[in-house]
Image 1 (cartoon, helix red, strand yellow):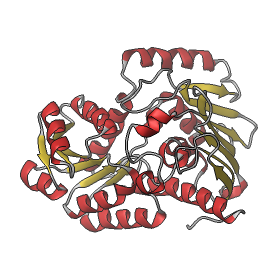
Image 2 (tube, helix red, strand yellow):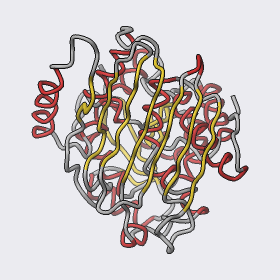
Image 3 (cartoon, helix red, strand yellow):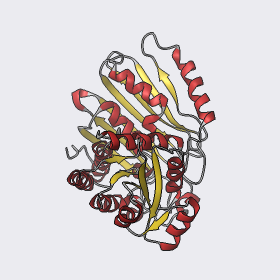
Image 4 (cartoon, rainbow, N blue to C red):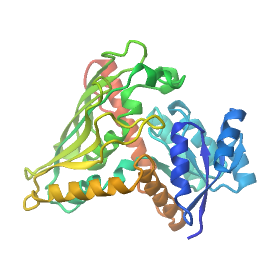
Length: 360
């Protein structure tokens, strides 16, 4: 398969990890340029990676023959930079969250469709073996129908983290707090497992970060199609960080779960991934004894890869293949929209002080 030529939109901490992922994919993908408004920063990034520095997506397409773009800029810029890239004829893979509103997501989906180009959203935790086991159990019917889903994320972000970039912790610069920055991965998994949310009743607040504007904690009760229920507790208020887990319980009484993050959770460009993602719950009849084996397998994999970028590479690999094969990427714009729809519903319910039914 011919290499898909990528540009990176943005030159920050996450962009460095994506550059490492792309560098590992010789024969599948190739990084050719970086785009950004700050000439000094984009040229410094380009120098580190031996690529071109450009001011716009159109320049990368015209001068570097870029075919696809990976958008890694701050959240409020995702929509504008994706729309610009689609207009330049590029396939778009955008970091989470896809955007800050369903309306922006719809505009991005429409623009990619009008250009005849692919649109995907980064959600690399879908490639964790422990996550894939849950998806396969659901697909095979071994849980019956999904009946109850839970997300619990108890993390920590200190003042140094919020001071590390000028856009962090503000509504204008970041677009939100824990829901927008840390929780989208787990919210995506919940939606992937249970489907689109029907109704949301939520609260959100800033519990112990007085130096930021946005929420550090959110809780929600959810209803899904077919009567399934869900709950969400996500927080950046527990020192030094405890875990993030997603559990799914089936109509036949069987339960499955994954600890996606453990301990002091990963911060892009500031820390490593300290604990492997593992299945922490599995009561599927006849399979209860597999938990220890799977944990050993996942721990062994974790020791052989750099988890800060290796799972990014797996998703980029899929995205490149989807472009060449003319199929949707594994995590599509529609999938990214569903996560934003859930986030938007939680914010809306908190403001309204009661349950809401998010925009379809």
